[in-house]
Length: 85
Image 1 (cartoon, helix red, strand yellow):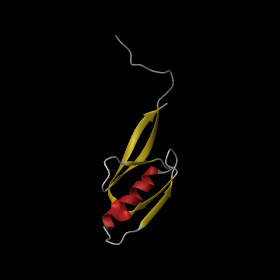
Image 2: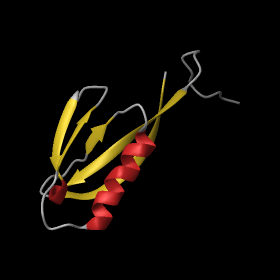
Image 3: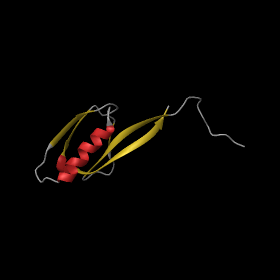
Image 4: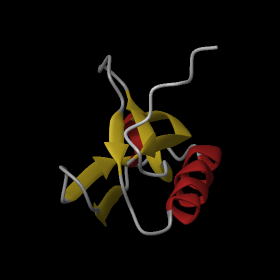
């Protein structure tokens, strides 16, 4: 019976926040220390649905170090869990 391919190390999991912006096809992937808190903060902003734009500035880890998003440009937010070694 074939066994699954493994590099020998245990697989780790990390979570990221996906921010879908109006006018873009790919989401913005943000790696932060506490992704659940950021997800909840962004969903609260979406629930308010305020017509006046608010500038959201966050420091992140990973390829994107700092991001500024206008609250009126966010159309969806998601949490993503991925495996890595």
